Length: 145
Image (cartoon, rainbow, N blue to C red; front, side):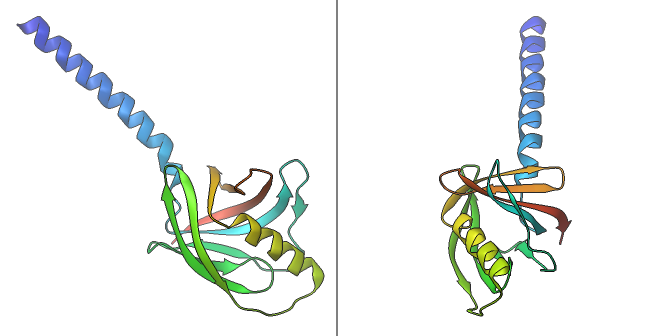
């Protein structure tokens, strides 16, 4: 009886370690309460640096709201994490016109921030891949709100 109890106890402890390891790997995927700055955008192997002199931010609120500015206009909308992917609702944006580098950057960013997309957080870098995985946004400078 003691041997069976010890075996069951050992299995439970080992299972706890495995589950703990799995949960710690998913922790970096938490976006709520973070803020990011655009570094580059475009095809993964041919990124275009963010427009010089343009302040950008992408804020994931604790309330499921995403907002920011990625070149010219301010925007906001809903987001959620589902099955390890980032799901954007419709984004509402102001409609100002800006110089071409900012408008091109913002247009490329909005194409990535559409629907269900894959993302990866590695240290202080967030990479968001469009639905096809062809284009990305690379952001840095996570700040916990």
